[in-house]
Image (cartoon, rainbow, N blue to C red; front, side, top):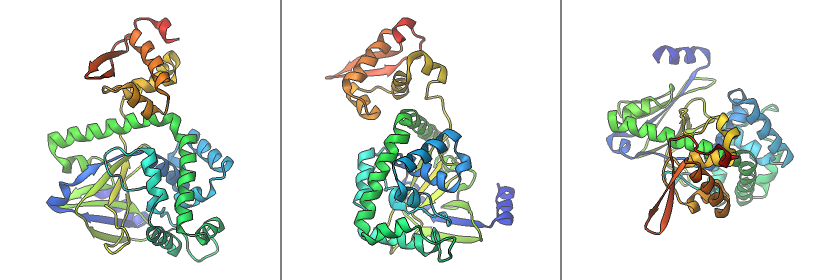
Length: 348
């Protein structure tokens, strides 16, 4: 670890962010995830490190941004030459698993002073500078002329379009991977404590001496130390290393809890591609969701399908012996079984 960090310092310099938590703050460290986070992470990776994305993700994201004219979103979320993307695109999650609608509402209703604060930081050098090469895009400046409220609402509209066009078809499998990651981290916490769990999240993230430290590559060496009474850890399928959000002074408008994005571990929650060919994409997504008991209504909300469509596929999976059905009070719950299909014909 020390050799790795020393190499980074020699090559590019090291930007270190230290979050001083202490015992009280460590007890308030929590995990969270949301569909909006996935969109933000994909857009940031596309703008700053497109090489970490597969060709399919790059092509689809670029095509959607271009064809649907989501230019403001691309400019703001991509990070600009300086690498800073305003944090209001990633609202602070109230609970473990936020919904898409709640996240979009938070973005659209971001306080004007917060928008002004973050965009001023971006234009003041964190994302763009005063040179011709680094000058802020005209599209962003025109949007800002229309006011902070317009910027927030326009970004929310473009985020929603981007999410449904690019991420919605893949979200059930992605969510299964994120949930599996957090479950694995919870197991480490139960057996060895949260310090060990944090030190396993990413090679550039560590817990030591009462603080979380994120090591980031930068053009010059710099250290930033913050005091906080909590922190939020967010797994991402698009992150290659840990990144930090909301590094700001205490007097910032609407100050936020420090949030750290880390790469989600791979797991086997999602059925293999051969299963896609056998039973179809919708049923594979259903099986990925049914690692724990769920109702038809809950599945419909999570997969963005009608209850009738969910019920149809559940009946087929039940007849094939892939899911079990139990009644709890007034609800019927479905859960995946670790068995092979009894009737292959039922899955055609």
